[in-house]
Structure formats: structure tokens, C-alpha cells
Length: 71
Ligand SMILES: [Zn+2]
Image 1 (cartoon, protein in one colour):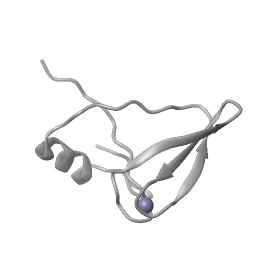
Image 2 (cartoon, rainbow, N blue to C red):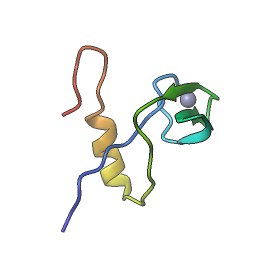
Image 3 (cartoon, helix red, strand yellow):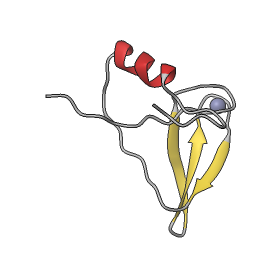
């Protein structure tokens, strides 16, 4: 059985090393460990699981871009 998940990539450097670094009240601050990019997100949080390189490439290939929703 397979499951669909979403992956967050840094739009500054395309890194997959994105994590919630800290909380400001109920707002999570997501942080890129590669370039230091940071941004608060108010109504979402992140979880973590292990995927194959092939699955990660699928996520990269289907990532949303401005004006183009994720597929
Ligand atoms: Zn980055």
C-alpha cells in the first residue's frame, strides 16, 4: 500500500532540508538548513518520513511554481 504525502522544498535554493525551527506562539517558523531561508506558517505543520530517491524525484518534478499548481 502506498500513501501520498507532500514535500516542502526551499524556493530559494531548492533544498529538501526544510524543518520547523521554532514556534512563535501558534505560528510555526519553517527554516531551510541549507541556505537559512525562514518564513512563518500559521495553519500548517510538518511531519517527517523516509522516502526513496525515486519518490523524492517525483516530488521535485511535480512541485508547484508560481502560477502552476502542484500536480
Ligand atoms: Zn534554502
